[in-house]
Image (tube, rainbow over all chains, first blue to last red; front, side):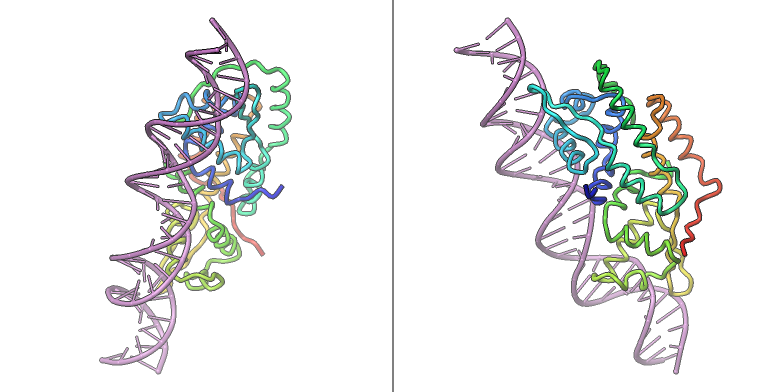
Length: 118
Length: 118
DNA sequence: TGTTTGGTCAACCATTTGGTTGAATAACGA
DNA sequence: TCGTTATTCAACCAAATGGTTGACCAAACA
């Protein structure tokens, strides 16, 4: 359960990975669909997803031959809590996010990736 | 855009730099004093301070031959606000999130957080 | 069955990162 | 003026990062 701030902040330092996280905010996605909007190889995106997974920011679950990626809010929360020591920023309501994600998962209808951001 | 999330998160990804930030939470410090507890050269710490400065996380001011380092909370706040997008999902509207970020980032600190520990 | 699809692995490459050392600059104190 | 203190600069190094390509494996489908 030790969320490694090194890994978390390093993962967040890359714009591609931040974009991926924002995409996953809308919906869980398969690796191929995550990769679609980016102008890089699938292998490169796969590496980014590995980095996000090791940081604890997402989780990947394989169903059939499709690997689904979903946000995992605890790591972001750990980073947020560390940052709060530096000021009265508002704390993230990630418990609420988790409840929301569970609710969404129970009524899963995959809407395609809509590559926003950047 | 004044606060570059790439630079901010990359700066936060190093444990030495996070330690420096926590030290500065107590008080402004000269470069030499910042370097003292670390088992690395003064030049290495100086580089870390440059990285923190470019990220906007600290500011350095030279008085005489001493360069004082002090926390600059706005950059951290920008990162915190970005992360808060992951807790502010009551309506998952990424376009709205982007507008929100643009607005927040362009308007610098209103009553800024005062890093007065002790 | 053979072929496509989804995804990773392995090897490779260029660039960046985090550290070193020694020399340089600038300001203070004697 | 001379030496000391505070800090950076420059050159260098090893390791990590972010990307590529081609081979590979496993699941789905004709």
